[in-house]
Length: 283
Ligand code: ATP
Image: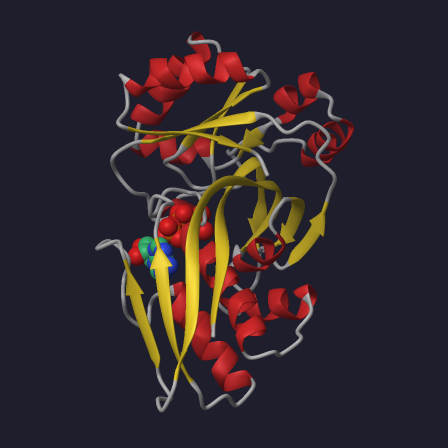
């Protein structure tokens, strides 16, 4: 038997770093939304074997115990004492170390796929709880869609999203390490977007207020190290984007467009400026 699960990328419409907790993690308040740029996870039983075999079409994905999909499989096998072998294939489409949660989404898709393959009947809540052990973005990725996410990522509240825009993702040709960016966060000096007002705007489909309240505490920190991000933002804004923000810890910048024609025009104009550009829909 073989199960295929989509693993969509996410963007942060809002990300507030509220402070550092005693356990060393930062307390976050975020509005996350999935977009239809997805990896695809295929899991297949390996008869007569007990291990985990991991493969991918991308030479940039680590094919070892550090892979988040591999960690998900180990966790499920250990928690439920499963002796069966499994082959996992990652069809990689999401840029790596881009602020789009590609690895976390692969882990969440692997949890969902193995839940089906081995008929574990686990609820989304149970899968999200397991996901916490793999990484902070994994619980959200189990749910996907649009959600307000708090704690270090462990509290996920799905919310309605009344107007889903076109999204242009622009990925500069360097990666960013999330822990490295968090090490440089000074919660006294960073910006603090108003996430509650953003949530209300998203739920009401109030485009003006979505654009007003979009914000990311980490943006200035990453721009300080990589000024190209600011250039991309300015370029997108001057080319007619409705709103522009860096996703997660970066470096991907996204532009929102509420009209398809404008989105296509903007996408074509930015392609001459940056190689890796995707035109997608919010899911
Ligand atoms: P986040 O937004 O959750 O911080 P990201 O989008 O910035 O994540 P990822 O693409 O998840 O970053 O990659 C972060 C690191 O995780 C990379 O160094 C990569 O080697 C490692 N990694 C482990 N498993 C995967 C996977 N399945 N796909 C991509 N990267 C993975």
